[in-house]
Image 1 (cartoon, rainbow, N blue to C red):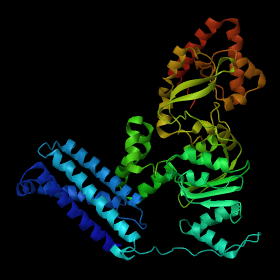
Image 2 (image 1 turned 90 degrees about the horizontal axis):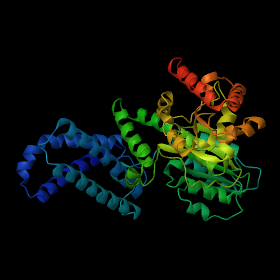
Image 3 (image 1 turned 45 degrees about the vertical axis):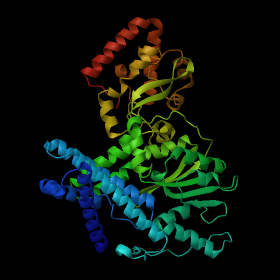
Image 4 (image 1 turned 135 degrees about the vertical axis):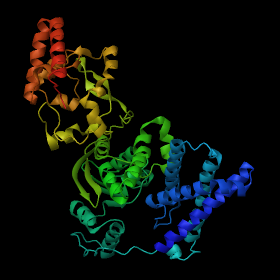
Length: 505
């Protein structure tokens, strides 16, 4: 390993010097003059380049995958470009030629891609020996458990092959989790390691009762299409097993991987590229160009929400070896939602006047696809005081801040102007939350428009029963004196919010 690192570092330094020389030739200048003036800056640049390459794992690879190694090169060099650009701007280094700096980066990247891909081709053609550059097989740090013979009469070699396939990528704990919770060795169980829906769609229909995918969901480019393909191949009640590295697990891993300060710098750029960029159409193309949709950041809420939106119900979930494993069961066909709420401005489906479903505008405070998890959250956590879900992991860190100052509700003014809402009125509820109300109150609720300022801020109810009683009290008063009631509720609610700092969490 040390030998490989040394060789690759020397190779990178030589490529940087070569690219710098080519850049000077392209500029039409003399190499000796520019090399003397840029010597110190070139050393600093080379150090940044090597450090970022090492920290990003560009020099760490055990499989001869052109796509993964090329992706690692582009990712590391993109981070280096960002750091160098920041340093040039911050230090006001106007004496350095931008052409030389960025052309050196581009040419070095191209040279790396060419050399590494040629090397991979030679490896696959077995022209080079397996131990070139000091790459050796990883030694197993655990003992393989004994083969467990299932009740079905299945050949022992098939059991061995299935067991080996799982243990090549994951630990015995993962093998035990899958074996104990599925019919792993059954003829009706499909074990795959794929990221494309095509490999699922190409399987036999009405044959499998269980589908297990060993590839991380993070590496699937079109996650919903993949889950929909799995849904199509399973009967109602069929099981689907998948694995993901959640956003929280990823953050923990990256902060442990690198030294202090550098770990937060790396995490910031990783979060920016793989979490923020995919949310905006103007930057989404860059995200897919650099990552090809692989190794994306997926929160626990988004993962579970996508499963529910695609027709699955979560049966069992467990975190093993810093990965999150989910066993789900097919309960229906997918929603095939063509307007998932993924960006910062979202449209939430809420029950409006006459029972009509309206789309309420808000700024995102929850992770994507969280709206599909209300039933899941209710069954796991129930309600806390104020009618909110207890320990709701769907709310993001930024979302908590937006909620605290009501910034997330500002876009609801659009609904006010459209006529979907009025200034004072009961909250617009989701269909699931609406179903928790009594039949009498549900029938009464749909006679009125929901409002921006709910009775909650006047009565401060603690439980669901108290919330319903508060809304009935408001309706009774509104039926007698609509204008006076809304006027009174508006100013009492404003007073409680401003001076008593009443919050709904």
